[in-house]
Amino acid sequence: MSDEYDVELTEEHIMLRDMVRKFAEKEIMPVVDKDENEHRFQRELVEQMAELGLFGCPIPEEYGGNNMGYLAHAIVTEEIGRASGSLRVAFNMQTMGTSLSILKWGSEEIKRKYVPELMSAKMLGCFGITEPDAGSDTAAMTTTAVKDGNEYVINGRKMWITWAPVADMAVMFAMTDKKAKHRGMSAFVMDMHAPVVSTKSIKEKLG
Image (cartoon, rainbow, N blue to C red; front, side, top):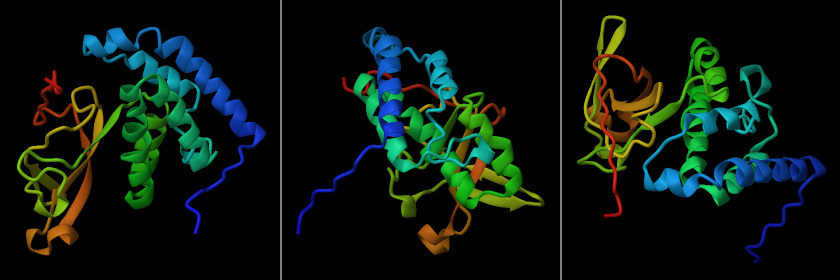
């Protein structure tokens, strides 16, 4: 049985690839080394990516996407990743870990409030799973969410949360029923600018 999977790009896919490649070579490649060495995050580049519609390939048009599909999404992430691994992560933060999660499990109110803002990069997102003592083992997560009236009170610590210091919102994972282990885990949309939220950058991760 062959492991090969041939994908034939349409003319639209080729035009998309060429457009993104041109953008990456012109806007990202000239500054990527300096940005990496100085730990500099350029929100402007993310906003330019949003203006080109790069975050919206798997997102329906009614929520600010372009509905081009996952192959288009893969093409876009590949071209941006060729120029900068750091900026390729933007698709996890704006699309995969946030917008798609909200579209699958969120209420209609939450979908319309957050997804278009993530598509336009008016909001930057992140998602919180990994913890200092549990790593990415979700069943061992210790962050809790306890219902208090009509609200939930979330307590805990997360670590290695990409974009946390610059994010405006987060899809935050916490345990609502510890006895149920992974089945007792819930996700919450959280305001990263709330006074009770604190973040710290981790630099020089490779020594």
